[in-house]
Image 1 (tube, rainbow, N blue to C red):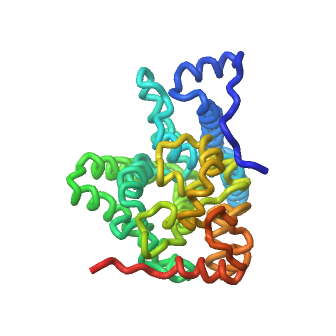
Image 2 (image 1 turned 45 degrees about the horizontal axis):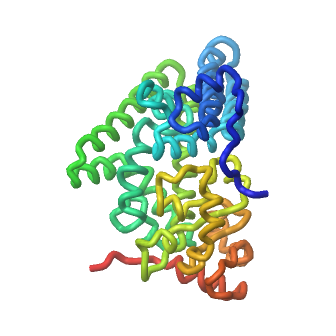
Length: 347
């Protein structure tokens, strides 16, 4: 099934949609307003665990309710929320006249979906995109053997333990004091509130706020690893050679075409609905650059296949591009392996 293109805007929208359309910058993003309502419902379910824990469910019954909540959270909204946060970080959702509404996603909803306020924006917009996965990128994959689990674990543990130190220091070294302050304010306020809520009910706080942070940060590190696993050492700054694109996947249909990561680094403000058309129109350019495109996979599957050494499955999913060298399955495997080796910092 093809990935989604531009959504159809109803000629006579329902009253609530008509109101939303007056408030947002791009009518193609009406789906985000709908998703915000779904995420708010999920957040209210999470908050309901506090009175449930105190008034009704004790012992194992509470943990059963917690599992049900996390299942709803995980299967219904969390993946779509994260990519809504991504899209609205690059393209502001609400008009300037109601600009305060732009704080609802990162500050009100974000904490329920494993995203501490401001940290995602500062890390992704202030650091990752400017550095483009090169060595000064705190989430760079270049120093690692990118098909080795032990190297990913080192990468993951560095992020989980040091990001709150390294990210503000990164901004301070570059004279970006406001970004450093935003990082510390968002992260600090989040964990302060979590600490207070843990005093009220540690079990509900663990389920609603702590486990989601750990899960989401793990997923983001696996996703970023796969997005930048295949890097051409001869041209690591080229988005066509340091990123991958995944097409025709369920993930793209759920998560606003997030699989088109190459063009996202070429033109970060491209609207999510335009990615399939851009790829279809420029396949010759992708072929000329010898880009790596997978059909039917997503970043998390790519990560899992790399960690388990299933190169043949990856090779079979590679898309043959016009102008790129024709390769057998074994040649594709050798080609991919050549882009997985560590790339040391130039002396």
